[in-house]
Image (cartoon, rainbow, N blue to C red):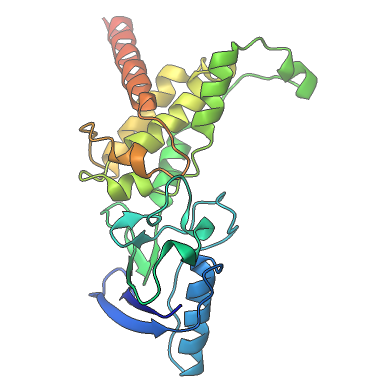
Length: 252
């Protein structure tokens, strides 16, 4: 395959970036998208130029680091996968591919296609820990949990924090991410003791970091590589309301 790549290049967060055009030839349709970028970088280094910086780690769809906007869509044209799981057979020979980083104020560009997603870490830290002592694995397994709650919690826990929900939202909302992290604990007995405090602190941190609000366009659910459901946002909003009412009653 021969391809034309229009890639965003930016020295750092303060620099003004721009698209630069590259040509790659002889790319196998069975190569992954990141392998194609590796091949491009090898040719750039051979020309004694700086390679394109992009995030990657596991290359198995687990870590969420390969956060790229490809032809106007987070993680590219395929559904339910990350960039590292996408192969070049998704593109036609001779096509032009536009590659850029996430576009959201809370995710500043570090360099080229790399962004700073530490805002998500701060939201997680705001949630704190659970105080239930389950002991060993057998003790934890003896805690009764309804099957549907366990499955919903596991579905929410599959969120990898890649930020596609923020990147695709017109408001740069992190509601899908935050609600998934709230839900995975709130649905389990171990997470109920701190549930009210957790949801209030995580939402407050999200607002403080400059993420927008949800306006129910469902774009986040459509582009999430782990197909996290927007029903988690409804669950979080309900828990937040209950926590606020409870706090007001205690202070009355």
